[in-house]
Length: 220
Image (cartoon, rainbow, N blue to C red; front, top):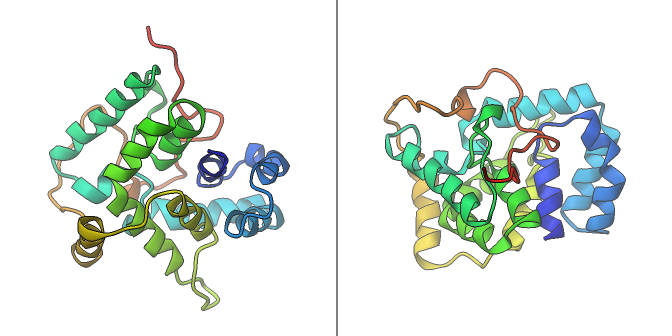
């Protein structure tokens, strides 16, 4: 679960808190082939530049959305029910989702933190249910074109590391990934009353942060 914990932290919006925790994160995954280069990149890049790159990657690009139900349901009416299933899954693990912080329960960082600290089996089931979206995000980040002409987002290492913790794709799962790459998410635009704005349309940094991911709130 150390890999999930580190992925949750580095896929979050970069903050001073993240920079202060880099040594602790590195100690969780020493010499990891995919996470160590990402941690080194975070360490040597000015925070303002990291934040700018993060927003450009995850908040302004649909194919790099960190919200798992977006890949399966787009902005269709079925997405609302899928988001409720995430909240129900957290509840089965003994925690409640805090809607007051304005974040969606399907954010990949939240799922990974839940798996690393609360219930890995439930988190794994959520990841496998939305495996096509996870793989789509991996493909988008590994194929990301940088301004200098190179290929590969710095954050691609986190998705590669995450996918390495999951079973190898085969059969219908592989077919689902191919369809998603070819067709993209469903495009029916609807309102999602009670939930935050779609990640691809956000104009600012993600609301989630490693200090405030609303998983782990005791049930009342």
